[in-house]
Amino acid sequence: MNALKNDHPTLANLQSVLEEEGIEFVRFEFGDMNGISRCKVVPSRHTLEKSKRGVDMPMGHLSMDTACNVVSGTGYTRDIGWGDGIYFPDLSTFRSVPWLPNTALVLMEPTFLGKPIPSYPRYIARRQLDRLQELGYSLLSAHEHEFYVIDAESKKPLHQGNLRSSLSIFADTDLMYAFSRSLTGIGVNVEALDTEISPGQVEITYKPAFGIRAADNAHLYRATIKEVAQKRGYIASFMSKPWADRSGNSAHFCHSLWDAAGKKGVMYDPRDELKISEVARHWIAGILAHAPAISLLMAPTPNCPKRFKPLSFAPTNATWGIDNRTCALRLKIQGEAGTYLENRMGASASNPYLTLAATVAAGIDGIAKKLPLPARVTGEAFVQADVPPGTRDLPGTLQGALEAFEADSVITEAFGKEFCRAFLAIKRYEMEKEREAQANGDTDWEYRNYFEMN
Image 1 (tube, rainbow, N blue to C red):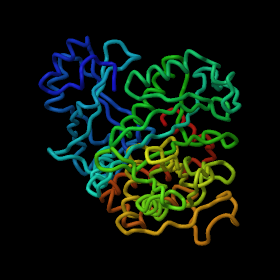
Image 2 (image 1 turned 90 degrees about the horizontal axis):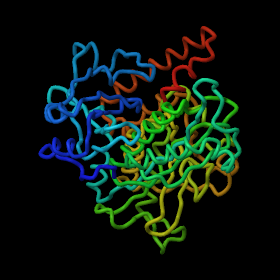
Image 3 (image 1 turned 120 degrees about the vertical axis):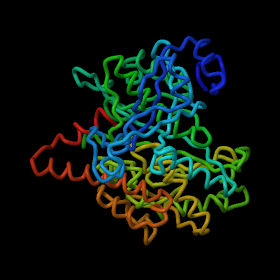
Image 4 (image 1 turned 135 degrees about the horizontal axis):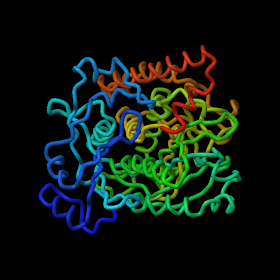
């Protein structure tokens, strides 16, 4: 899982692990509502104390947009006197940081007045996974991120495009290999590296994991890529649509259902005409039923829905198909252990904890209600004649996605009123800032706000 010689430490042996591993500094790290990595760095001599008592940080961190503006109306600023939360580490996430000397990190979750924060994305994801476990299932998953890499000074792209061209992949071999080594060293098990069709666009995929570790991997992936690029004079951007004339950055959420013990895949049925199990049918139906609502979480900035364009291989409607890249849900049927579903709605700027939670919450509703599976698309989901009658479009704007989210009681109840209050306040603030920029003729607002931070 990591480069430590010891297993994940406990409070009982943490100090000895720090000494044996030569750890001098520990990053106490968390992802905010936008999925941006934030941390405090603690010298190792204080790490045990901080692990026991927690790390004080303002609750306002859960009220920030991507540009670090603190948004009112979230419930975490004026309402509580601008107070601190206490963040406690999950020591099972403790690992060394391979690109920094004598440094480790550990992921945290916040509390306030001794209680968990119900709106915190990692907490919500864990809660949805617990609900799934209660139904007798576990989730094996991984995010597939695309991102752009440009030179920090010249702004030139890492490569000139041309999908999976060997020349493009090796435009900067040292950087690509540094990405792979750093990810693997921090516990994200890289499977493949390749370049995408647009200049500077890269995709690096990694092995799936069960439960919350999958979202932890995605969080660590984005932070690692951005830091390693920065150290080598590049900017790595997960902004969803930086340029109108180039491909968008997606974060497809690939996942499969297994039994509660994680021993047997349950989405495949060799007796079925399409080889799809009953539970898989209900699961897919649930995600499609709530697709407009969860698009707010899959594509959460004003820039993100700009990916949803015909002929772009980003979905425009709530459709599914077997190995069909034009649909919102792409089912890959490869036997009991290899059958999985690719939720293609996700933008790279999305928060991986929220995309996991949204997919699970929607799928659970499909199982609970035994929703029937709609007809699949066998042609192209961009072609109206190929789309089943009654298929709903995905919202084309953040405002439309927000309205669909608020109208969906299943999803809002799954995420809770505290999350809805905080997250929607941040989204409304972002939309207002975009409207102001447009009114002032500021055409670079999205790029300034999202390119380097996302």
